[in-house]
Amino acid sequence: MRIAFIGFGEAARAFVASLRSTPDLTFAAYDVLLGSGRDSEGALRDAAGEMGVALADSPAAAIESAEWIISAVTATDSLEAGRSVASFLTTGQTFIDINSVSAGRKRETAQSVCAGGAAYVDMAVMAPVHPRGHRAPVLLAGPDCETLEARFSRLGFAYSIVGDEIGAATSIKMLRSLFVKGMEAVTVQTLLAAKAAGRFDEVYASLSESFPQLDWPKYPKYQIERVSRHGVRRAAEMRESAATQKELGFDAGHKLADAIADVQEQIGRLGFVPDTDADVADQYSSLLGAFRNKA
Image (cartoon, rainbow, N blue to C red; front, side, top):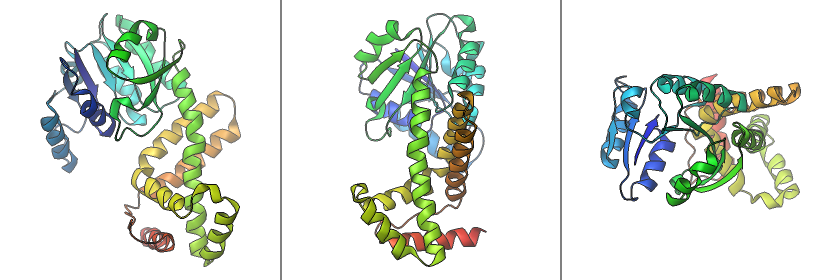
């Protein structure tokens, strides 16, 4: 069985790392970084070489002879990723869309992908891909999931089928993301502002007393690391969560998700790397310094 990836970033590499021990699997990939000359292109090529992944110079070349095509790109590029291979897909191939986008975006992608007879699976990855890779919990949706279930089971996916409607899996993730990424943004923004106001100790003490179940100081240190490191990518996901709220008719929910995205993106673009050995107050002091230097 040959599996091709459109996009060979963190998620795709994690999937290959855990799948490669399965006998008789081969891998190919295409990524827009190829030929870009950017610094990250070298890391991509190194990772592919170490994992035995054949890099292709076009999406069409990557999916040739592949039974499964897994789309693992940024949220903003998900529709284009599907369109880039749509005219080359044929009956017997399955396009698995793991991107964190709205249900409407996945349905639009599926309409393009399935025109030539390929199957489409809406997959939502519900936990970090490290260290479990493809064994991280996933939700599956779409009319072809029942037929494909034996293959998912044989390859060791930790899956649940949530329906035959394309968009059902990603809707669950997008609605959950409003809460998870919102908690991240609210925590970091609150403590950052408390530091700017000179009232960090008082705000921190009040929050830790009111919400002891959040495991202070581990909780705010974890949140600052997640937002600083992944804020830009999380912001793109939250724009799709905003689209989900809009599709459901919630204007205020749409604005809320957009505001969360703004916080995630602003902090993510600072390039701030928290010192994991520093205490929580010092971490937020350093973040405030990075924020003011960027302003």
